[in-house]
Length: 202
Ligand SMILES: C[S@@+](CC[C@H](N)C(=O)[O-])C[C@H]1O[C@@H](n2cnc3c(N)ncnc32)[C@H](O)[C@@H]1O
Image (cartoon, rainbow, N blue to C red; front, side, top):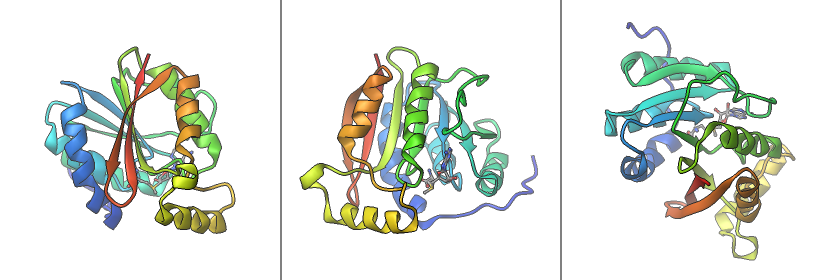
C-alpha cells in the first residue's frame, strides 16, 4: 500500500513509547487483537506492533486529523495496523458492531476529555472484553493529598484550558472500572509521574 497520508510526531509519544512498550511487550497475550482508544498520532501502535509481530492493532479516534496520521502509519504495516475507526467514547453504544478484540489500550485521554469519556470507556470496555482480558490505561493520576506536584500543576493548567478536563483521581477511575466488571490487576509506576494501570475483566 502506498502511503498518501501525513505522519505526525508528538514528542511526548516518542518519549513514552519505549517504557510503555517494554511493559506491553511482556503483558499482551500471544496473537492479541488490541483496540486502541484515542490513538492520537498513531506512534504508539506503530512502535508496539514492531515489538510484537504477532499482534493486530486497531487504531481509533474521535478526531479526523489524528486519523490521517494513523492512516499513514497503518499504510507502513498494513498486516498489523488496522485503518482507524471513528470512535467517540462519549457516544452511547460506541462499542457496537466492532470486530472481536482481546485487549484495549488507551493512553492520555481521560484527562483531556470530559469525565463522560471515562464513563463511556469503562462501559464499552465492560461490554467488549471477556473474563480474564486486560485493558491498559496509561497517563497521569491524582492520589489525593499524596498527588505529585507536577500532576497538581498539570490539572490546574488543563482546567484553565477547559473546566471539564483534569487529571483524574485514581480511586474514582478504579471505582468506575469495578462498576463495569473489572479489577485493578497492576499499577505500574512510569517515568514523569505517570502510571500504567492494568484492569482485568472478572
Ligand atoms: C493527548 S492525545 C493522546 C494521544 C495518544 N493516545 C498518546 O498518548 O500519544 C488525546 C487523544 O484523545 C482523543 N479523544 C479525546 N476525546 C475523545 C473521545 N471522546 N473519544 C475518543 N477519542 C477522544 C483526541 O482526539 C486525542 O487524539
